[in-house]
Amino acid sequence: MKKELNLSFRACRGISLLLLIFFLIGSLSCDKNDDDNNGSQNPIDQLPPATQTGENTAGCLVNGEAFLPNNGSIQPLVLNYLNGEDFTLGISREVNGSLYTIRISQFNIPLQEGETYLLNTEFTGSPSSAQYIINTFPPPSPNYYSTNSMVTGELTITSNDFNNAILSGTFWFDAINSEGDIVEVREGRFDIQL
Image (cartoon, rainbow, N blue to C red; front, side, top):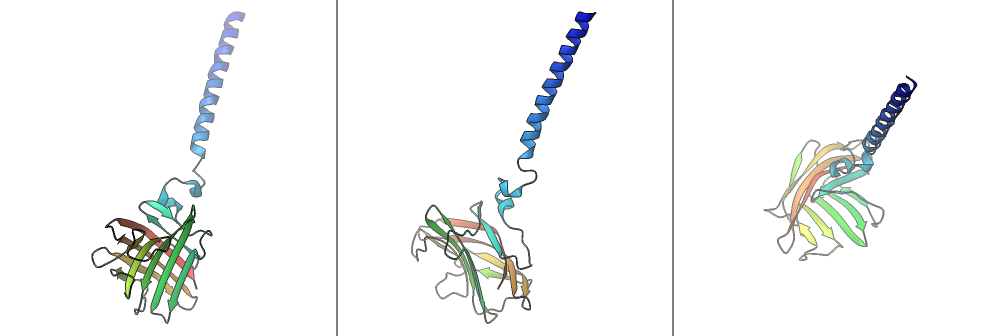
């Protein structure tokens, strides 16, 4: 009888130890990203939320990868909105000594909340354009991508709070370089207090 109890005790202890190991493995594998979106591997989760409260944030996806301003660039986030008509948004990031910039321009048009504007021209002398630029190379260059009449995008103003100097919106565009390569910019958003 004593021998049977001893074997039963060892079997229970072995099963308990095995269950504890499985529990710990399960806990460790589930814990990594449940409470922390900053560590998320999903690029869309790395972008700031699309707010309209003057958070001074911006971001987008470039070819499916998160693109966020960083302090390595001289001016990571710039918004100019002059005379209620001339709008320029710049989002820049520095990576391994290279400067990457998203630029959206809308000239000679008062921006209205809830309106969507077509980005369908090149930057030079254009009223409505978007660019993706690597190391500030001017056109023509394989590092300069721009919208045109065939490769386009859209800018939507989600908030134009003049009294609080807040301008917010969303954007997307495709841009082409001198070699015919296209960059895809998606899920863009900005929320800036001037």
